[in-house]
Amino acid sequence: MTAFQLVQPLPGVRQWATYSPSHRVELTSHAVGTPAGWWIFDPIPLAPAGVEQLLREQPACGILLTNQNHARAAVAWRHRGDCQIFSPDPAGCPVPDVAPLASANLVATGAETVSLEGGAPAEMAVFFPAISLVVFGDAVVHLPGRSLEILPDRYCTDPARLRRELAKLLARPFDHALFAHGHPLTGDARRRIKALL
Image (cartoon, rainbow, N blue to C red; front, side, top):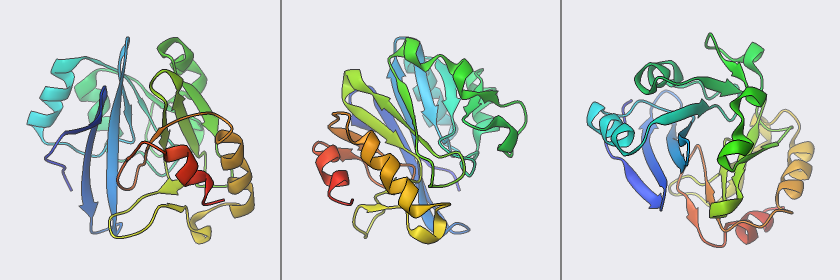
């Protein structure tokens, strides 16, 4: 379940993805560049040439898990990138030595975390106002062959609460969105996601 292609959906953003037969869904990972280095989101395995290319461009400043289900290959990436893993709920994370999100100091790299309770356990999104971008975990998905959609109710801890939390997030202006499952939206993302509510 290794991705082989590193692509650039937006300036300063890298993406790699592959289909997981065991999960029966596309798994997508991203690196978002900041002055401190790459923030790496929900990383799945990437072929060595892709990892080397990414880390040649700039170092990793940290790995962000957007919910408890997204540890994926974070431990391997921590080793390759020589960086820390951060989670909204380190105690509930299935991998060891995970730091609390508050210690990531995201604000210093121009980012803001947004809790999305009601989705998967410890669900969050990350907002990068300088590049008009939101990175989602499972709260919103954009899978191949399907429409953009909010996480189906059967996977939510509280579907109504998730929709309320998404409405708060959508008070922020942004143009682009990345998803842990599926294709990015490059332009008009806020309006398209708001239409789902």
